[in-house]
Structures are given as structure tokens and as C-alpha cells.
Image 1: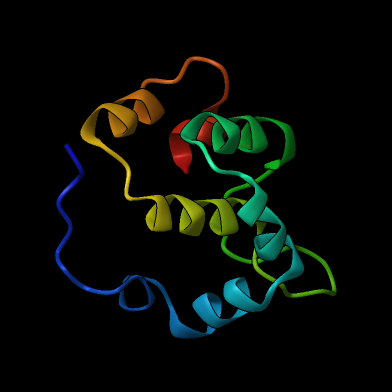
Image 2: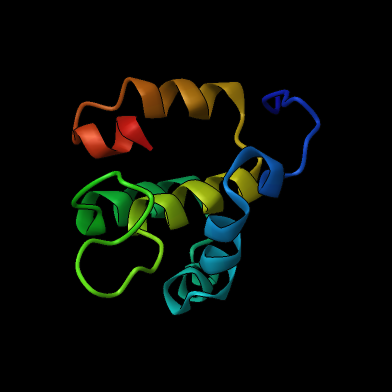
Length: 97
């Protein structure tokens, strides 16, 4: 069973500038290769180092965590998958996303 949302589009749930930057980022475009829930979890485990919306430093692109969060929005997770994320034992970043 798919998780019910408020019915609002993703770009209304996040800051508009952040959404635009996520959609235009090269990293997010590379995420199209990830087709399954488990592949995205593996990507979080190996790539996410913080859960702030923007990268740190001089380049102010979207963070990997928020790109992967947006990827999950587009995948329309089930209730079971969401519970799996919230109780995942391997990384606090998986639970945070």
C-alpha cells in the first residue's frame, strides 16, 4: 500500500529554489539508474555525510541527502518501506532521509 500524501506536488513540500536545483543537478540525473528502494538505501549508506539541504563550501548545490529524499518522493514508497527506513539499523542518515 502506497503512503498517502497531502496531495500536494513535491515542489510545494520543499523550497522551490532547492527543488529546481535538485532537478538540474548532475547527481540527481545520475540517480535515474537507481530503480529499487534497496539501491537508493545503498546509495544513502555510501554517499550521504550530512542531512542539510545544501552542500557545504563554495558550491551551493543541493546535498546528496536531499537529492536522495527527492528520489524517494518520486518512487512513491509503501508503508512497509517507510517503516524500514525509519527503523534501519545501519546508518542514522538512512533514518534521517
